[in-house]
Image 1 (cartoon, rainbow, N blue to C red):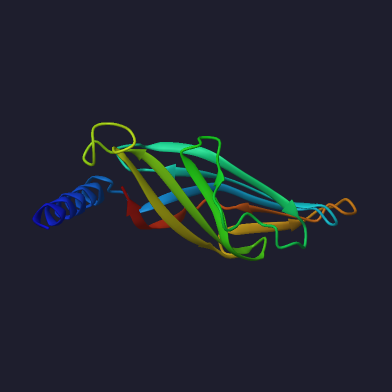
Image 2 (cartoon, helix red, strand yellow; image 1 turned 180 degrees about the vertical axis):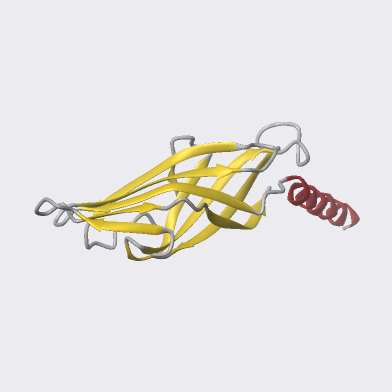
Length: 163
């Protein structure tokens, strides 16, 4: 019984160390662009940066689904160019109103010395509304809408860390 308690305490201490060292409070989202083609597909492209000093990594993520469908990337995570990052849309009302979930898995020596016991995953969320996006209608018939992020960085607040 005491061995079980000690093992549990050791495991929790490892999680605590991960939370202390994996220190970023939010992912940075930039270059967000959505494009909806009338009668075609909706596409999203964006860049995620994890500013945590243990990783300081950046990648590009993309997704495409049929316009007007509920087939937007959810509930599973889609991989990004750097496959240690993933993303999905928790909610999607329109191409200017949705919630992005992002995750990043990276090495944290505070939780272990050998793979996979030295890996940490952080999870973040960003609510996207019209505010950071500027949208214009296409000039060609059927070209739909294109929305692009303005100069500000969107923060995807990190709400969980798992080791």
